[in-house]
Length: 355
Length: 276
Image 1: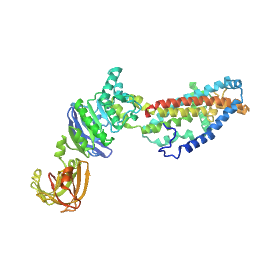
Image 2 (image 1 turned 90 degrees about the vertical axis):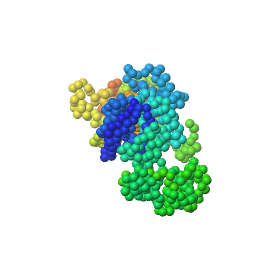
Image 3 (image 1 turned 90 degrees about the horizontal axis):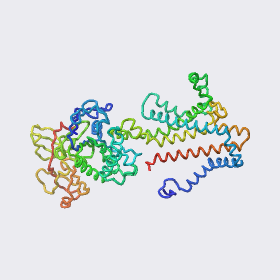
Image 4 (image 1 turned 120 degrees about the vertical axis):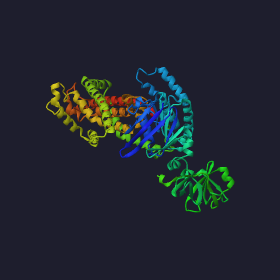
């Protein structure tokens, strides 16, 4: 089922959580709402579910108006960050809950419910824990039960609110890959909220980046990552370095180097900010065209990467570069050494756009 | 579970802690209670049976335990309601009502008894309207239950309230997303979560009602066989210097109360089996 959000606004008191947001989620896609806390992503999710009602705007399910529909009628599966399992019920009873509260006419028989729950238990790989209580499960297991419970009623839409937020790093990684595979199997239209850009990039078909109640950009993970539409998106996805300078007729001048910036061809000596991702900075010992002289201040290996803090010679600012481990091994960098840093890719925004 | 908490325990030493606990319990509870049994033992078995099964005594058991049970049930229902309203809704005067709930704890029971008796008597504020409908409250078993409800209410409210406050909104939202209506959510999700607390409140309210004396004697009328409670009967025996007879009845009350509380505790344990 496709979801359409038309010009939805929502305020809590004086705080505007959503400002005129419109979004289309095509049927069968897995969409991530990505943004910092307070960006309105959870409010949007709860409005889709019917747990909140919008101040203005409409929600359409498959082209049909659903704004006024009750939560119970919307056929959405909702997965909460803190699982929200019924703690007095066993895993089996939790998953069966949605089926057992159906009105008598449409309620499946006991045997049918049992079969269905066992299939779901198989799907979430917890077949032998059917009689446990939620208190006896680990966080990852609980979240899988919550997911199975939401899927039991065969929802038209699956909504997940920071589903992996309360889990530790390893389980989170495992579970999000599992969610991706699961979605490839069952293809239910899904929207999940996250503030973890890595999670969104890895799991989602499409990413909707939100900030201060508005959508900043939507697109496939590679679109959003490679061609950020706004400085905010650049800043939010991955670590980034800022260069201040000017841009004039398609050429940016930053930190003493010239770079071409074709998207700002019409700019006329405007103040601008250049964004360079940490891994888009090449470090060499030889002076080269477009390279900035800098001093190595700090070296830190983080897993497969080595983080290098560089102090620019032309200003008192430092930038951060990330090198693959083998590259760093080859260079044999020393703290205090003079090197040349060359931005391989820079995106320049004229400063008016700056928030 | 291990018997001793020797390892990784914050409290100093299992042995002294348990020792003090037993010492205190002995001093305050066990020794007085065993004295009760010793005194009773001065009666022969036949005399004991005769003392505790006299028709007037049997009638008083019925009145005491019956009214206590009824009062505890009423409290369990209305106590949950009061707790629900206090936790879920905001309204002017909420703090005041919250404070009022504790009043039966603080009020001398005799004052409560006299007040209730005068309100529900034939000419009282409420009694005069109930009387024409054939409802007599003061000086009947009904009055006893009213007094017991009054003194027992805070127990249920105060045990259920914190549980309700801790209940996660998300639990209810999850239930409604799964298609449950308000009633199903209450019946299948909220009530079972509250049940252990309700049972605790019920047990406390019941125990309090069984032991209540001060307020009831003013409103009960104390007619033998009709509205005479067991504690009053014990006092009566004491006034007649029949100490053994008094302790015999007290022993029966003690045992019955203990067994009932034990059952409620077991029930409560069952109701919270999910919490490991």
